[in-house]
Length: 125
Ligand SMILES: Nc1nc2c(c(=O)[nH]1)N=C([C@H](O)[C@@H](O)CO)CN2
Image 1 (cartoon, rainbow, N blue to C red):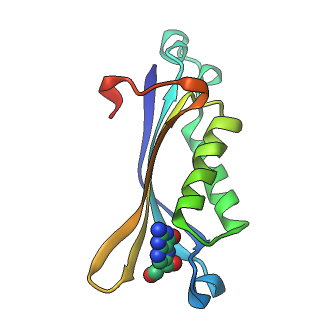
Image 2: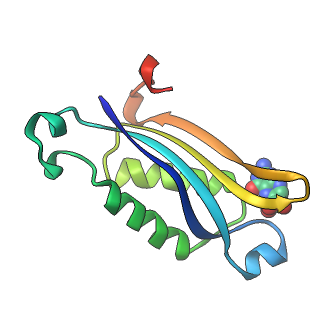
Image 3: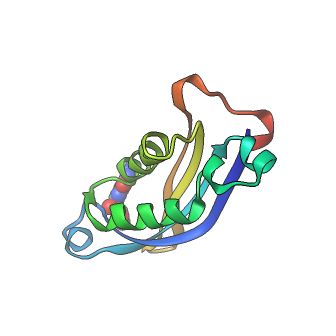
């Protein structure tokens, strides 16, 4: 399995338990790694892989369309988007709110999961 990574993707999202967080979207930062088939490199064809430009577009569109109370729920939503819509076999994601609490630069959630029993290869951590 090969892996695509997307680093420091900044997206507007409505997330949080407080009225001010429900009233307006805030910037969240995503770091993502997901598995793709080795066949892409063999055939040099975008049709054999997951197009990361489309992934970024879909995450932006989906997060703009809904509210999440918890950052955990937002994380699970993105993981399931990668599994269900893109067929990714394995996903690692880190999502952070930036400067949302005094004295804390970033706070968020980290999820690492395989679809249908796919386990983490040693080299992917
Ligand atoms: N485990 C969690 N704890 C908290 C969350 C969360 O999403 N998961 N969220 C908040 C507030 O929305 C946060 O943004 C406070 O500044 C508090 N705790």
